[in-house]
Length: 317
Image (tube, rainbow, N blue to C red):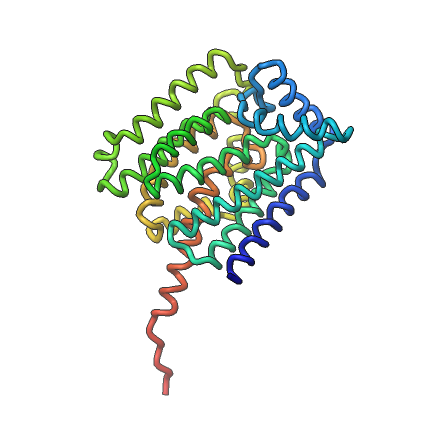
């Protein structure tokens, strides 16, 4: 009971911290314009887009009821609507992350440390484009999809894949989560490639992406944005608390399911880097929450266990 109370309080605090950190540095005019554009897209039945022209339909559908309700009672409904959305999404993100970390075998206290690392990286990533809430919806959906896939709720995984593609085009990589989960149970990727959950997710995602590309806006980002360079990558690695490097270094300590998903992740990450702006790493929160943080902490737990099991060195006489 005490552990649950601590976890709930930690999630609530980190959600508030992330919202407050962003809003303290946010540009009010950009916030107002963003929320207004989401509300207008629903009212006019057009496809909402983020600052780089990538569609974000699910974000608009999520903000619309919140903003519409607040519009009736306050003049600052744009800012208060974004605050409410950020709080709700942050709670969902950290709750899903904690459940995922426990699901892959991390201890409850280690999982709390993981949430602290994740919140620090999210706060860093949201400094510039933190009002774009599709970037918080995406990691939440990937985490829920992973939980459902590992518990073999495959119909739920297909439904989440459909929502993820409605949110952002990169949601089309949810089938990789299903592939890794099935591969863990069926002994490898070759057998998993013929499993119905993988094909169902892939078909749903491909159909949605094709549809939204036809009716949606054209992204304004050039292929492999100019800020993709060694200096920027080093800067982002530091902002992500070194977890990409530490996850790579401690890959051998990761649970088998995470290993399989990590082997598939480069396809996903390269596509993200090639089609969006890096800036503070906002587009990398999903692989950070799903892979980099838990693999890093699995390596830390393994290292600590090795230290405890190491035989004592006899004292010299």
